[in-house]
Amino acid sequence: MPIKLPHTASACRGKSTPPVYNFSGGPGELPAAVLAAAGQAIIEVPEAGLSVLGISHRSDWFRAVVTEAVANLRRLLNIPANYHVLFLQGGSSLQFSMIPMNFLRHRERAADYIVSGYWSAKSVTEARREGQVNVAWDGAAQQYTRLPEPGELQLTQHATYLHYISNETVEGLQFKYIPGPTDVPRICDMSSDFLAQPFDINQYALIYAHAQKNLGPSGVTVVILQDALLADVPKDLPSMLDYRVHIAQSSIYNTPPVFSIYVVLLVTRWLLNEVGGLDAMQNINAQKAQRLYECIDAGGGFYRCRAARTDRSAMNAVFHLPTPELEQSFLQAAQTEGFYGLEGHRAVGGIRASLYNAVSLEAVAALCAFMENFRQRYG
Ligand SMILES: *Cc1c(COP(=O)(O)O)cnc(C)c1O
Image (cartoon, rainbow, N blue to C red; front, side, top):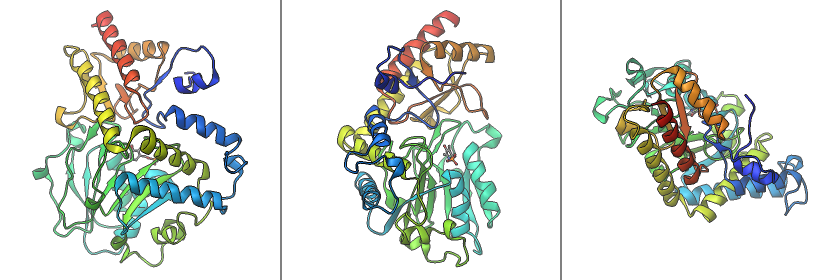
């Protein structure tokens, strides 16, 4: 399948290619202004006079990039001083291991894990290598079509921590409440809805999100953690896997992904200066999701959501058509008409439209018009 560039990039090239609306589940769409600035920076960062790909990570310029990116995240999320903000490598999958290495290894008590989908199931596999895990709830028997209600969680008394995923990217399930007791450190993978809406960081001991779904290119993962969590970290961890090492070196322990961090900085500037903060972002995202789910529901059952209504994700709408053959025709027609990235994750099939921050209301309107038209032809 040929890869078409998103409309923003084709516009940069100045060609009269048809618009391509990017609904990819990840790496996802980025804002046009960010892509333009990132493109420029590959040739020459204006204030440095060099390509971003050739600037030392020990330069004053890069230190300033990290400092500003951290400050912008602190501003966007109101992060207090007792939290550290880190830029790490290895994606969210490495966090599945690093978290239990630092916080579960050699501990007497179990950690609670909520298994609500494809990604949280993976997080448990890794945690079990490090210590005792209690699965507080498992949605596998219902093929991960809904999330638990608060009363359904079977929690350990004084668990070492509770881990969950705020937005299950593959199944399109998003928590509308914060699960778990207040006296257990709460750890959350926010990879696919970080910076899509405001949240209270004080409710969490640690949150993490790789960049490539909603805040930049792959290669960097944002970790925000409470200082108090570090009290009992084992002494013999490899340096690269020890949060304290990265904190001590302000995320420049070894060569970090300079370009990816720079683009994350550009995205935080876009959120602050163009969008106007996370309340405004949430408002736009809610409109996009409402529009798309209305369009799905209006089909008289032709489009069928995977997720239970109350647990539907504002970031990833996952749905099916009456037959796999119709789904194939849908994807083919969508591609011809300039919609990219709509195929569902290989674990669940069907269609997935990801509505990350940079996906415009206009793109969603175009998708809805296409879906309405397709249903009239085949429904
Ligand atoms: C995509 C995804 C992951 C996997 O991230 P990698 O950076 O590829 O390791 C983990 N968690 C969630 C919620 C995801 O959406």
